[in-house]
Length: 218
Image (cartoon, rainbow, N blue to C red; front, side, top):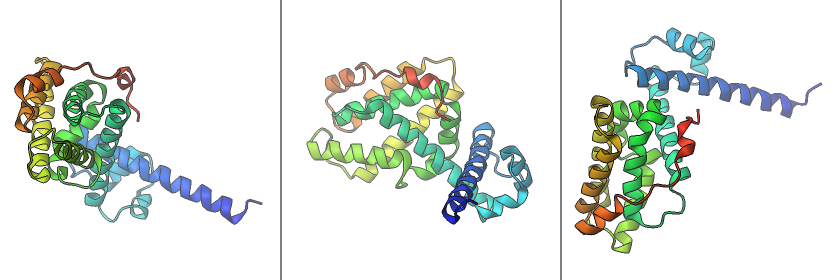
């Protein structure tokens, strides 16, 4: 007979699987059309879970969709962590982040669509991309790499530019996304006080190996 601890662990695993399935379904909906009016029944069916399971995890659709956005942006940030590990220059981290984001429109379209549709409300959140970007900005300010400015204000500019890049990648698929990202990265670095010639060089440094991006992690 299974021990109480084993039964509890199985129960928690099943709960985690169900919660993840609901969040995954909500992410798909946000990426496809951004329409949060889908019924709970429709969300549960997409997640392949029972209708009653929904309220074991979320009090409302609003709470679910918010959790889905946080989940997507955290995965986005983890992707940055995986590919930018080892880069010490805050300016290069900012530039590389823009260029990786442009490529993720092809490799991780769901994440980019969620960022595009719901990222504005999370520019100043304490998780996901915002937390990492603020860390890099503060490092650049502390080292003198960036011109002294309120890091929260700098984060607003950085986040707004990234959202514009996301919109550009889907609105104008005919444009060279890599080149657009390089140009925007150079402009952002100059805005942060990096000398023009330095910003030009940093924005064009070779990116880390991104072959692993070809297959989404989820």
